[in-house]
Length: 215
Image 1: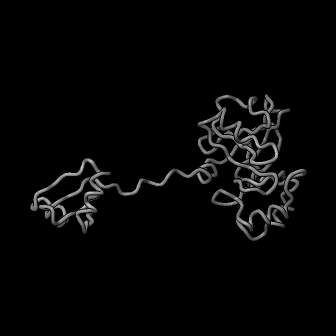
Image 2: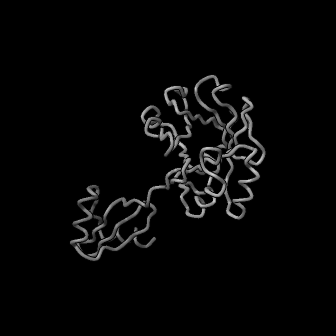
Image 3: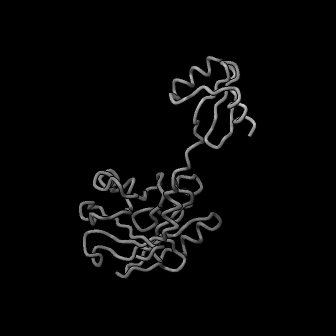
């Protein structure tokens, strides 16, 4: 795959998926294979999919699963768990899905089993192979890296951490943060409580306190 595309595997038979898979599409209902995927691929990113309208990142809209109308309700009731709805459907259903979902923003995961990796125009992911062409008992998709990054955003940066407690002769008390900002502590009891969770706290002279608080 190119740097902007990743390979995604899905299968009812989780044991058949290549052992080096890093991205998986699993079902929260129907086959409900996500627990098995997590057990076998503890470090993979698992994109969740529903065939019955339950909370998930992707709604499966095809015969035997959800209808376009079901997908509309799924979106309206905000049962999608990603930042935006993702709808899986084949190309022949795309027009009906588009008509039913007119209005809200959503992303398309297309199905076009050519056996050759490709993105259907307008899709952010395309399932291009089923077990007849994938080389095993599994389906294979390619997905834009931007879609994966949207579904699995990096964790937010840690909150500003306290570096030390400053005490001026036991009367003027501050917390000094890594960025140089300070917060006054009003009571000795608060200071004592903070000292328990900040064992690296120190006591500075009045001159040093002034140096930090005058920034």
